[in-house]
View 1 (cartoon, rainbow, N blue to C red):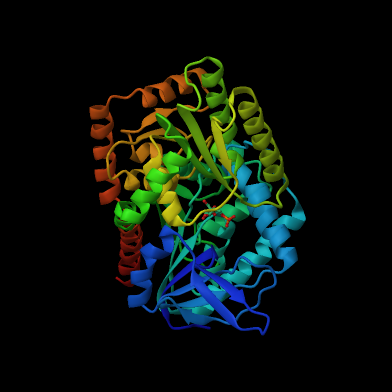
View 2 (view 1 turned 90 degrees about the vertical axis):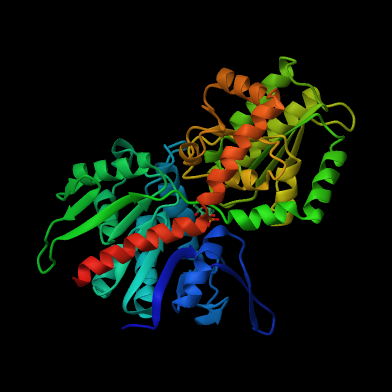
Length: 474
Ligand code: F6P
């Protein structure tokens, strides 16, 4: 069982949006996102294949060539979506890995579905990979795939990267299937995390919950019957964005014009605060609204001179906690506007919508202060996009210390979203920041994000996989 792809990416979602018309004719468009942009050149030059789900239940599509790579759709039934995706991935692992902000649910049926779907992904990857290929598996939805794939295809080199945090062992231990998950991951040759907190948490879990030895950042996976001892490298690889493309887009006259128009539509406020998130309880949107509400109450800011635009794009809408969050956010926005708006002048402009990338670039350019108040976040690429869009150097980034981005972007104003008084002070510091300080900080942030872009991130991970491959061939 082997295919022709020298590089295989395995992710929960395909990098394209597939549509099928009423006559059954299939078409596709590239889905937006930095990951595919970063990987596209290597996929094109090395006969790459991408294994993933279309995002639509019960859509059964044969593998096809598109966007310079071989696309291998994995079909998920409605039941799989409910139990593997909404259930175990987003009702169990997501809250567990994000500091149990809401209670994770543990259901055996969800676990069984996760196991079954991970096997399906592993089989598809095994069939796509050429002899001796490199396979890069992504994220928490596919933690069993590394070991399953190793069993099917011991000849391939396997990487796994976690886009979200990895929890402390005291929290991870709640998971009834914790050993199975660790064994699944340790099937990889290279395991990557966003920040050192995550890799340290993972190594502590390995030490505490498996019989394997940890030396520095290497796990020595003990020999099991018929399986030789292996070394697994654990590293930190902070993800980034396609900075040059975002910068270029933000400089266009179309985006500049739209950003002026946005400010005009808002009544040309003195200060435009901006929040951009998926509507997710990890993002601290309620904390942000509390900060805004109290600043208005305390007369430290006044509408319409200061206003907040909050984009909250719809996400995982059938998962219960997301429905509750939406209700809470919308009630709070209504209360703040009810208390502090005048006719035609709202302090909070709430948009439960998804916008094209041009509109996002215009919003970033229009904003004076970007508020990223996540309670826990693997990286937070919105922070990096905002920086890439600051071609005039005049925006200020306020960043929660509980994001991976806080490690990368020390010139942001870093805050603790749970400390409402402290956070209010930081937001006021951002609003009142002198222009030369804004420019100094933003210049340093832009240098960092320009150098450490998503292509550099992918190169580093592939380089570490190549080293493993070389040493295995020695
Ligand atoms: O951050 C993890 C992640 O899975 C991203 O890859 C993705 O963009 C986001 O969460 C939303 O995921 P989904 O809509 O596939 O559940």
